[in-house]
Length: 374
Image 1: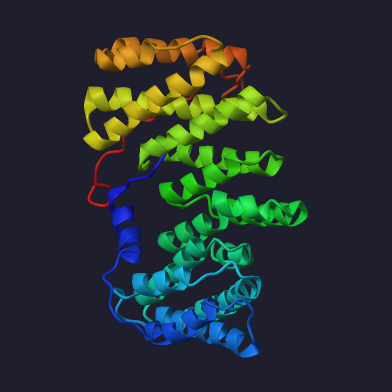
Image 2: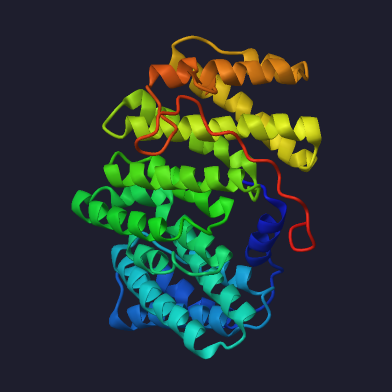
């Protein structure tokens, strides 16, 4: 699922797309391209590679004209090589100079907006290079307070293609996985839906108790945002619900907690849609996102969980029959002191420890609008 939250995408795209202009790195292209043609490299050739990387990364750090950064990144990425000597020096130089660039941005650039752009652009470069050696640079920025920087840090650190390479060394991959899960877990609260989506995809690829815990924390964060009506970009919850259902189908010691999150999150999706159609209060695009989540979950999750095809939600939405939709919610998940078929199958208790609650929590009413809460 591709995220399309308008404001966030525009901010990210502003860092990625640019107009070609001549930058300092272009000056060194003739020398580096001569090195690219060689089968055996000398020490001087290796120095040229290092100088090329230094010049290009320096451009990214020092520029105040961000229309040039895409050109510089493209130059760097397009001057990789599979020749062993070249590839090793290119990788070593990239790590050293990007690390220096990140540090320089933090210490020397006082303008916060420019600093964020420089750090984000260096992480975009890390993402484009897909070099296992560079992953540490991305992991170190996951806790960055800026959402755009955090997005690119997690994207670069969790790229599926990159992990195909990293997984060749299982011990190193396991250690790195643990670090990423720890760093992601530390910033679940307060992260944007786009960042949470990247975390969700990464956790969903893993089979470990730590990955399951991260997925549960993400689900908790989404449930909380529904409860206080601060939720944004509901479309991402299709991925969360799908991965939770995958965990349920696979079984395991965390299944009761997984089932609880699946049921409560899906209940809030349904309740939010029903409330919005009765009382208004959310934007049409949010209603469309909720429809997509409900139909995706019915098609890809409920049939597998209940061992039978499901289509009632789709039919109720198409008929604009809120009563039928509420009845299906209650049939699946329960209401009051009655458990639904899904909740009963997985013996879900939605209450806190010591309290028996067979049905999900009711979505609180929308907070009154004020000047500070428009």
